[in-house]
Length: 168
Figure (cartoon, one colour):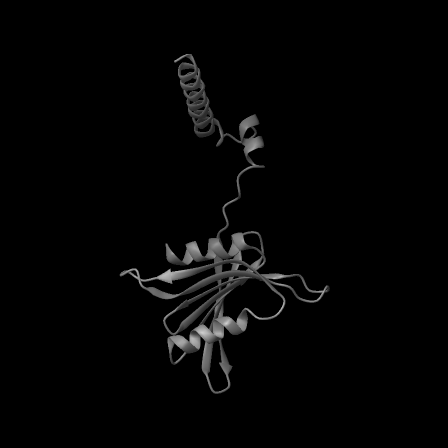
């Protein structure tokens, strides 16, 4: 019984410390120059926002065109989003597999499900390595039916931030 009381006290103390830190975070993190806001800067990611730069249509021989939308992040880096429509979901899946070939590192690969819980496509986050003169590029590829969506940018954080920006 003594061990149980000791464990409960440790759990309660941990909970109270967590609540105290959360209260400090909420009350003092917004004050510029405070010790807490200075320390929090190293542990929290800055909010990435985007400005729409425009779009272009790229003609692909025999396949139609791809819409390319360009966004500029508040840190000056560019992120692009392309939409490519195919004649069937199978052709879109083949295109996804084609883009995964070469010098790539797959970071995440998950199925995309529809409202009924059925697989409607696939989602891949990857990094493509180029020559030593050109830095690597990150991609978020997603198929939904016969469409392939592709976000490309300098970091996974930029890709996910643009995806959130466009869906909310």
